[in-house]
Length: 130
Image (cartoon, rainbow, N blue to C red; front, top):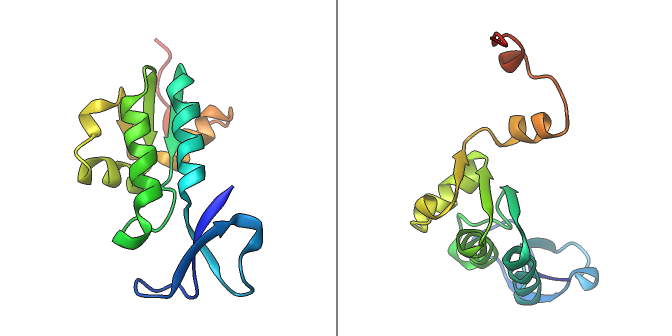
């Protein structure tokens, strides 16, 4: 529902928060805002299974990492089976020292999503069934 927006894709760019649908012309939504963080955390707290793939913003820049931090913490706190996939998400978990708090960590984010979508993956297809 809200974003942290930046005037340019730069770590030191002018930034401000607000509703996602009120971004000024030319500004970039570069992280999720505080209300969206809260909504994600509320939903994740009720989930029984969580599959998280991809950071919420440009978490490499500390000013735009709060959304990723909030979601990572909510996934780690969830009373659920939690899977985190993708190199950037795994990096965020490791940097926040939360990797041990999730059920499964995989660097294969995009491939994991394709497998869940029912696509046949060449590397999986060659594994003998027996």
